[in-house]
Length: 214
Image 1 (cartoon, one colour):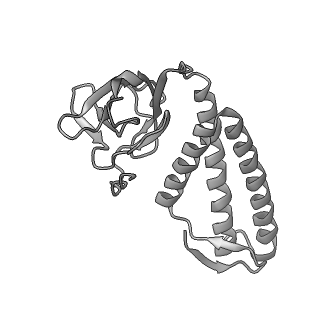
Image 2 (image 1 turned 90 degrees about the horizontal axis):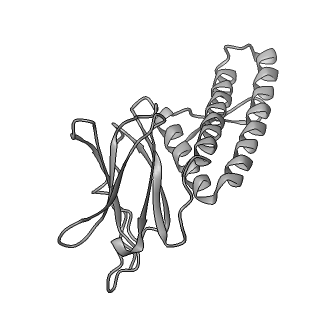
């Protein structure tokens, strides 16, 4: 994220970009989710401290420069963004406690589907596939709950073959009428791990596919 000019106090003022913020939030949630519940709690506490510190600075600058000064407005916007991140972390940590715990022989795919406005998309079918040279193999399917969350556990028997120890995953999401509204077939997650988190935002721009590990 690019930086604009520094505040008079010497604190750099971030250039607010909603799309970059949302992408950053999802990336951080993904990393924290894979690390587990305690990591999410610690990450949330860090955002609490960051938000409080940023708000205090914004208030002090507001007294000196006026609440409508561009530097003060930008800093307060940043504090609001951190608050939003903290809220999503808390919500995600609560959801994580509801997810089933996989057995030792199971692999899992889980995540959240949101609409273009960032709200959870419920009652959607999520299918998980293992990319193959000839015919892609369906590992299983599940449905998003009222929060837009989904969770799928599958067995190693579904994908393990001679020369293939890990799956190459992609997802497909369909609405209640069976219409495909999202697919990650062009961004296959090669050599996926035992636990993989997906943050799916409907209407988001597509990314380039990852290169397959050699």
